[in-house]
Amino acid sequence: MWPDDHAQYIGSRRIRRTGSVAAVAKRLSPSEALGLALKQLRTERDVTQMDLAGEADIHRNHVGLIERGEISPSYDTVVKLADALDVRSSELVELAERYAAGR
Image (cartoon, rainbow, N blue to C red; front, side, top):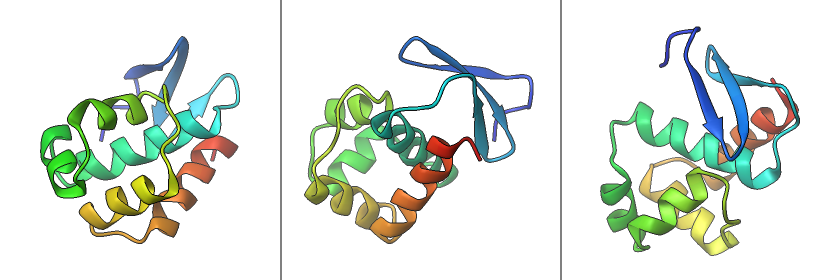
């Protein structure tokens, strides 16, 4: 977890971490929210982007693009990433929905 005073940027938006969810000045897009959720789950498990990509059978750059909210992954990719992180895809999407709602 990041300290409460640590800020991160998603695209051009500055977010502030509070607990396990980000407080966001503007509402996150679905892609940005999914990227934050993916990054949170990956870092909680101490998994690198390269290792996650290998487990999910996708390119490492693709993981980075998803985490930064620059692309929207297909459903197949979401399922592969969730499986590689040993969570249900619905858990990944639920966390993304919480980010998008600012909770």
